[in-house]
Image (tube, rainbow, N blue to C red; front, side, top):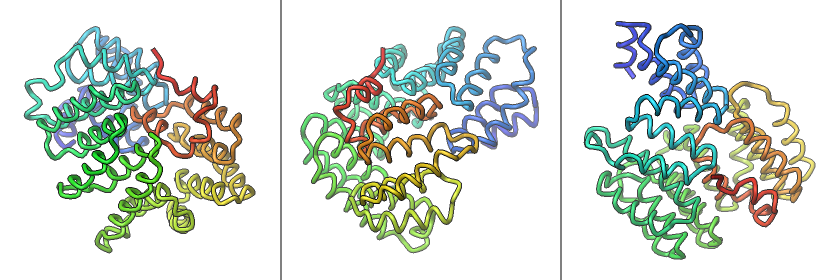
Length: 367
């Protein structure tokens, strides 16, 4: 970040560092800062470079929750510059639009690990991670398993590659081997809590309910064993709440979600969690009240997340028609993450909709 900021100090009209700074803010969820960073560019439409104009249009479209427009603009950039970063942006935008086959076709245009990956391993790891998601959505578990093991040669301590391997094993009907990988994760540097939960969710999504509950419970124990100063942070508390939910510890979830909601009332995920827990505990009145509260949220940069929670509440309440309509509305508001469709695939709240024709058509990978 500091190098980009220094570049702007030297030349304020230099487009690329400003866009990279905006991308960092977007990745961190700091949308107001991203918007303020991009704003000087949106008012300068006299730039001679079509490349620059298309890049600006791409970042503006992402900020406004317009993934289709984001794809159109980044494809225009690709016509002018077929480099690794552009290829990555095209592929991830296609994945955001639930077009995993297109993502894989795009990524196949360039080698998976370019020569400079030794200096920028992160970019290669990210692209491999999104390719893994695309293959999983298409059910190509054999290739995914092979590529996950290959990726570990590039980044031996990447949780992402271990999770991809576990996900592929689960898809191939080998849950015991997948769970054994979690033991390896616990010996790796870093925080294995989120990867453990990811594997637990994958187990459940593929019909392994009991192993999923057991792994979610282990994840809860891991979070609770963190040092007190770490446990007290909002990030750890939120991770613990998600693990408790996956472990079906409804009373504990309700208590912790209320603490988090009191601390950060502007965040829809905590009100949403209280709503789905109320639905699961049979308190329809409270669940609907929470849904109504979510429906009245109007702050910017929600990208339909509050509507997603309303869809979850409706699904848990077995209001299938309403749940699908709300989900469609949430998607239309532009969820900005390329992981959205994988997250939806393994979202336990939408289990009641798995056989619903409208839900299946809505979530089916597109060409």
